[in-house]
Image 1 (cartoon, rainbow, N blue to C red):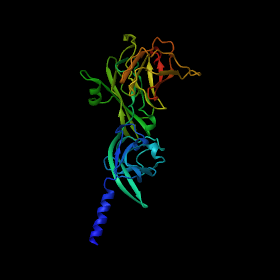
Image 2 (cartoon, rainbow, N blue to C red; image 1 turned 90 degrees about the vertical axis):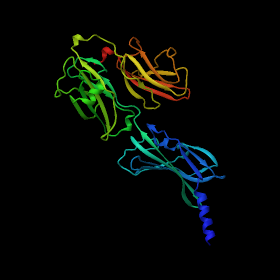
Image 3 (cartoon, rainbow, N blue to C red; image 1 turned 60 degrees about the horizontal axis):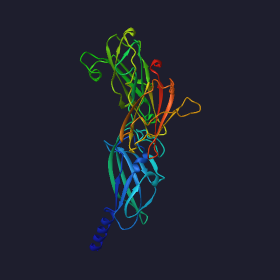
Image 4 (tube, rainbow, N blue to C red; image 1 turned 90 degrees about the horizontal axis):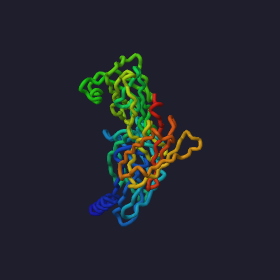
Length: 373
């Protein structure tokens, strides 16, 4: 009898040991959708197919408490190595078990911002019995695609208005956030300080919290700005009260109008092309500045430009063969100040199709500097 029990226990241990190996293929940092959690490699070490299903548990990285559980359909795993993705496993059922997080509905919804654990398990089905035979856990950090970007006043600009207007772009993608609010901080830059030092060390002249809009007219109730003094400012973006990202620190100097020569501005940040049906938005003044990461290793551009304010949506002729395209990061800076094809305050769509037939886009508003207020 003891021999029989020992044989059963030995057989049970053999069944549950290394039948299926789960290897997650996770994107560990960045913007992450639910469907990306199912990029998995399954290794069946047995000599025959195994039937079962996969489960994904999104948890809090600190305390391990589950936030969302995803359960995929049943599948047969053949001997050897099998690559799995969300399309292969549909339909997938998701259940949110922690209401403190906002998770977009639908299979393509974005995960919330933060640090999370991801545990992927394989449950084997045999003779109407289901048992967990494999589990692998990892960690991811979900962060916005791009932080908020300052627009006006330009960095190191000479401002003439005693009550200047400040404006910025929201973090992207905008649908990633809930109850998005902004805090603005502005400090005087003292002699010998950098703008970043001033933001960190000085008492704020202005701290404007919980703003909904992406612009602010300097309040008349705030301390009066003084000519020939330099000021630093920064925007902090918050989602549901939690800080998600901050802009760079920009500075400006208040000058009397008669003292300022006209200088063309080319210090706006580079705007990233994104692989999305909802392109990012940016403001371009006199120059078109964008960043494109050439993952496909293309050697020539395949770009179309559309004037979104033209009812015919005609393409704009432009010679891209004069601009070199390199593998990896490309920073493109084109002077459009004298190009009559680009109209002041018109919106444009730049669409790039790479060698993989992927579409990368940027939507921008073009301004001529004399038209910027």
